[in-house]
Amino acid sequence: MTDVGVRDARLGDTPAVAEIQVRAWQAAYRGFMPAEPLAEMTASAEPWRARWAEAVTAPPSGRHRVLTAVADGVVVGFAAFAPAEDPDQDADAAELITVAVDPARVREGHGSRLLSAVADQLRELSFTTAVTWVFAADAGLRAFLEPAGWAPDGATRTLDLGSPVEMVRLHTSLV
Image (cartoon, rainbow, N blue to C red; front, side):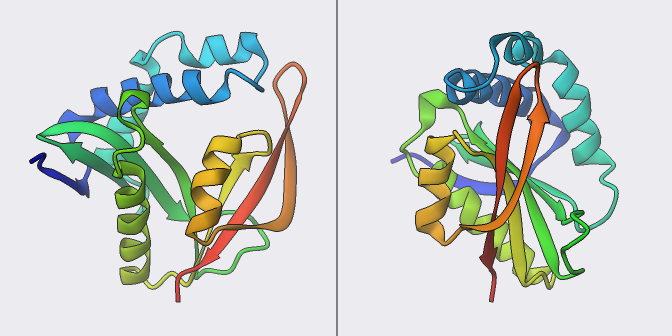
């Protein structure tokens, strides 16, 4: 039986988190993100290691968190959240910044465990709603989040990545 769970990320987890981020982006974004920006963002995990190390060791507040999914002591996924910064959100709204599972470990329940742990921690921190921005064309992430109670709230934005890439904001109630 595999020992699985979710815990707060540790500094020693950040190299694995960065590697998972790069592999997950390569797998998920290949179909709709322009090739050049995707290649630049995923050429190396090295720049991401420092960012994740800072997020874990020096978060801007106690309401910023990084969680890791582990299986037999190996980091297989991660999620990060913070207070929502969109101007139309109240102080009781959080943002799921990212959730990713190593592409070699999808469909093992790690993403669901991460999402559940995020919701639990957000409730403990007195957040009542959560939002997240997803690429409109990211059918995989939307197919994961929407059955878990996330739905578009009407907000959209466009990223200029050499060509426009549409994003939609999803939201969910935590009460």
